[in-house]
Length: 322
Image (cartoon, rainbow, N blue to C red; front, side, top):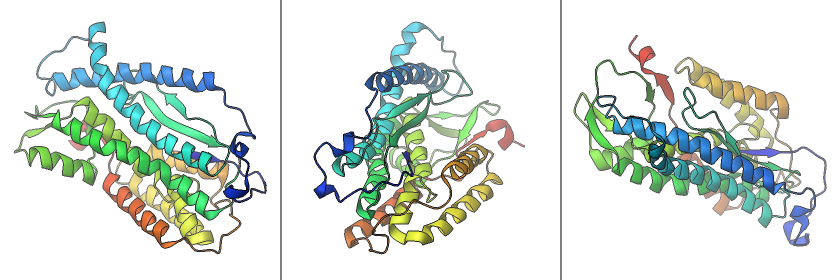
């Protein structure tokens, strides 16, 4: 996810900028980025340990003692989820550096390492310190993150599903039901086929990290305001992207009637629109159409969104039984 400022700066074409132009408008506090990364590494490793214990318990049919020695088994989850989120944000960051746009290094956002927080992290974000005034740069910076994260999430998903197993599900099992994006369904079918009832795929922690990576990719590709999808939509459609933002917000409200997990996502979207507004900051060449190659990339972004999206990301099993 990117956070774009609205400062009225006159940014020339990248080819006219000196090599260090993207670094002049701010100085990174590297210690803060490293500290947040280390804290998030700890919280994701601890959460990863819980996911491994759940995986090893075979849907709760055998007891697994939580000991400090089990922390080692939390590392695959931690490394996977940080790699996906880090690749996403570094995609944005490196694209900013290419176009001499001042941006921070990624900020990793930890969560408390215990339920109900299931991921150990809220994600990661970079802050872009100056407006992006050229359509080509806006498009490339917006799409670079989702593509980079997607390229890491897909092999992680395949590996995680391969290391999963198929087990019978107890009739009164407690916990959460995870909505499966199309890509997740395809990977599961490719490896395990269609398990007979009451068997289900018991997710390895790496597959859960990949699931969260797919979900984060889909959310960021929502064509709303200053989400990555909003940057892409504005680069494609100009001022008309505002109507797409309103349609995206209406879709989020509609999804709230289908899954309670959309309450949080919708609240975040409303907060973002309240702070940044529904209209995307303009570029200087707004009326210049994108070249064919970037239009094809925009179509690929739509395909990524469809493959990573699920209308019911997470639901308590207790609600599904009623």
